[in-house]
Amino acid sequence: MRFLLILLSMILVCFNGYAKDDAVLTIAWPLNAGPINPHLYNPNQMYAQTMVYDSLVRYTPDKIEPSLAESYEVLDNGLTYKFKIRNAKFSDGSPVTAEAVVMNFNAVMKNKERHGWIALVSMIESFKAEDDNTFILKLKKPYNLTLQELSVARPFRILSPSGFLSEDTSKGIKAPIGSGPWKLKETKLGEYDIFERNDYYWGQKPKYKYVKVLVLPDANSRIIALETGKVDMLLGEGVFTLENYVRLSKDKNIAAYKSEPRITNMIAMNTSKDIINDENVRKAILLAVNKEHIVKYILLNEETYADHIFNSSLKYCNINEEPYKYNLAKANEILDKAGWKKHGLYRKKDGKLLSINLHYIGIDPKQKAVAEAVQAYLVQAGIKLNLIAEESTIFYSIQANGFFDMIFNKTWGPPFDSGTFLGSMRKPAHADFMAQSGLAEKKQIDSAIDELIVSDNETFIQEKYNYILSTLHERAVYMPISYEHDFALIRKDRVKNFQFGNMVTEFMLHTLEPSYD
Image (cartoon, rainbow, N blue to C red; front, side, top):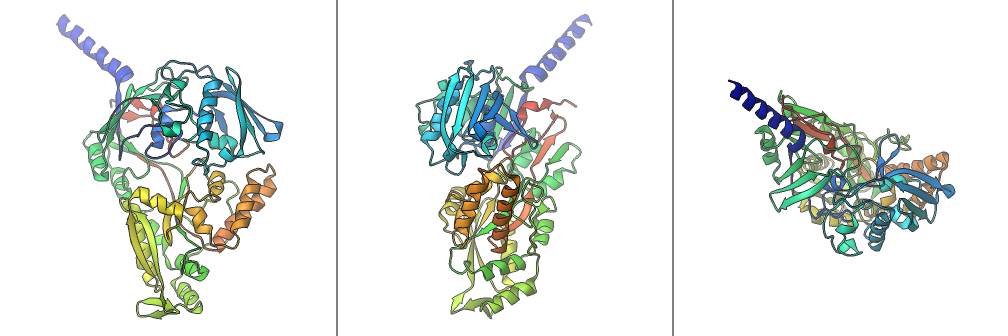
């Protein structure tokens, strides 16, 4: 009997030890994390970049908090930023120093053109290590989004000097060694990535020893893995459908979480392309689509109806412009007056068919469903909408080069919205520059953005926002559809203490705890 008690005690100790020290959190993602280069983009997955690397500061809705820098000062009327680097270590045990930060900024600036979408890159004049723990950043002119842009998932995250292959990280890195809460332990292409707790991490230590990320490209496979217990939780944009979220939120074994609205889901219309460069056509499109029905029946009321490209709750974004509400009769009237006359099912003008292409990502079921609904609504206004499914890499290339009439588009959520997203409109890196390129006001819009991002005058900034957002609205450049939320599905018997990150790409896996209820 005594032997059985001792054996039981040993089992309990081992179990508790596993729970505290060696627990494995298993999640799923459509593809591998990639090389996890902190300074580059696809195929590097942003959730992994934020797991492995720290930024100097961290975004929160209320303020910018210290992160790898334990404190910072803004000097010289906004021209100089002084960061005190905390006593931290990289996951290889080497110290984080100001000189390591300099190496990373050098690497980013060597690839300056590629990072042109983020305005801070063009604002940087110089940087240096004043001493081992002091990093000085100097700007050409004051830039009021500096701290926000230093906090994002890439490219200003800090790689250990031992992870550098050369000074130019655009050519690759030796290893993904950061100072974040996790380090990459193992990768098997097409199967999984395993992250291990970084015991040198300066912040809250992860309760889990490992995070195993299964590579499951098929959305249904990911849901089955959750239901059968193969994975403990699912989170992240597009990892599961809204239908499955609604269904599993009723499952007593699953905890379902939904964030506040973050990203605007919309369609951009190319003002420089034939036919859709006609403002009357664009306005008719906005009036002919019943977005309320799309939000209700396709998005299942799990996303919030959108009237404008930015949520009005965002600073500077509450503009006084009448929304384009569904009004098919008015859409038909506008097209009739503009000379687009019906010939059978569709309209023509000067012998030209009112035919427009809409590009979407072929494997995205939500985009596909919304595209088909928009197509059905526009038929009623005599507009022929051709749906073109694209592979994701090609889709984003089409956004950038402007080879589209209409294309799905999104804002990027906090901390990008609204200032950094506006700043990106000045470069042909995303759909926005090309969508606006046919506007007579395009130069004035870009100039207004130039002015507002360097100002500290709240009234002046608001005036510029009003001009930009009102002009884009009046010229009918975008069809805002919904304000998206983040979603998570978690097995109650496996995981507790879930919280969303402050950014869409910030998975707070280090705050989770194993649950054995």
